[in-house]
Length: 360
Image 1 (spheres, rainbow, N blue to C red):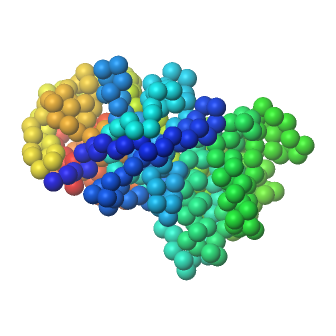
Image 2: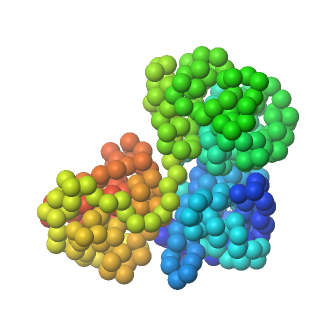
Image 3: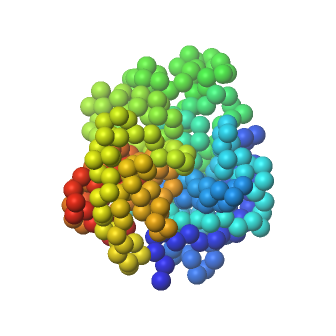
């Protein structure tokens, strides 16, 4: 019996150079795992590899659409990025990668009867999940349209430039794409510079009617997403019509601030019940580790994780009893939090009767 914590070894079927510093990777999913690896547009995969003796995990959005009948991700080279360097320079067709099935809430329900207007603010590799959303929305909903505002430094770094152009031709009149470059000057001043708050305000004044748009997506650097979100909220767009997708690198859990350190010390030694893969464990909270996830993993239990930054929600668990404090949350919906779910990489027990379940 498999669980959501199980990685599966998938063969690299194709590697395509998309730009000088980015590749897309197609993973071969055997028939026995097809159902397990079904995904919604906008979701991501967690990949694991052993690099120089260390377990390295990263999240990468799926750039293919479900209707493409392939599982493809894009990996952009980051300065000092261990996994991205490996994927861009050393990974080869035929290699095996450990992969968790798709997860994430950066998606929407698309159906043929809907006629909606979608728009997205993206920068750099933030296009990866949005490409899947664009293809799905326009293919599934013949009456819908999509507007993309896409920021990059220069045209040579635009991921999926040719594929986007082909989609624009295919969905003539239904897909509008506006490119914004910071290191190349266009004739129209609007298209020069980054997608900051001023630029987003100008876009919402001149290029699109935010009140006539049903759903906005934003994916990219934190500053760009904050600018887009604030500009939309200032125009009266309801929060539930704005979907954000944050990226982060896996690694050590964030350093606790002074107040959080004091609360962690107060929780030191508390015994917690942890339900994982059908077993109930007793775990002692470790104040030096500072969160439930690392306390569980210190026992040797394979609690799931990827980013440790409160973003990916791979470490999600449900509070069965007791009280827990969660410091950061970018990965859970309001409904999940209301239902008792926490991100264990960001949580610590604040009562003596805490039981959390990774199986719920």
